[in-house]
Length: 233
Ligand SMILES: *Cc1c(COP(=O)(O)O)cnc(C)c1O
Image 1: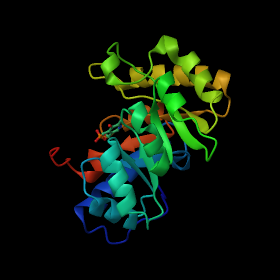
Image 2: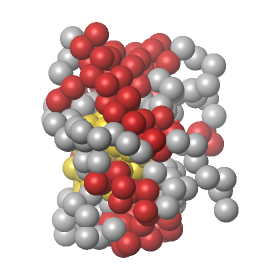
Image 3: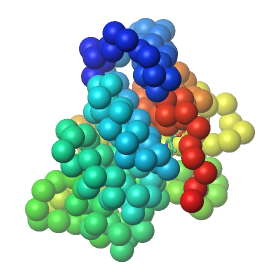
Image 4: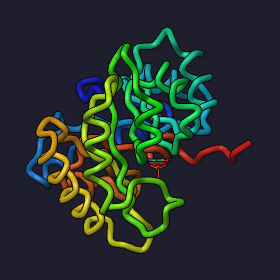
């Protein structure tokens, strides 16, 4: 997100929420002794119509996130005239991998070898994160901590993928900063295998200050900016 774009007339509720979150991010960065320029804010627009994404783009948003393939594909096609970067942040079926590759700029949810293999390509590289599961529940998505290194190796040896780093969602019932400290430790293990893969995708509406404190570089923020999501239809 371009932090220099500050709309002078923040008249719409959307513009106001965006400004509030931008200010919150700047505050959290300052508190952590970091520069807000190190941070990429991805506005997660799942369940919202393409018109809202267009409005966000007019407010200077450059990075948007989606978690369902069909919805993301349709919006990316609708908004192909806009210079947006599309981040796929949801669980991804291997059989949909090639289609996601066609419109996504970054995939945050690489969590198993079969998905890595499905994303292999001799054409353009796509940026990706390996998602770490911070719970004991495999259904939450993400690779188990003990399987992190083998999965990272698999990504590194697969043509068509450029590893940015590690992604995680803080579990319910754990203090977010403790959870994000575990992500930071995992990031160090990833960097031991690939020094350039130093990015951390972590932090959502409720916990982004804690994520920033623990080194997050890519924040995935939905409702704090978009308002409540429409009910899934
Ligand atoms: C929906 C979603 C977000 C954004 O969540 P909010 O609580 O609305 O900020 C972030 N990351 C992932 C993986 C999501 O599915």
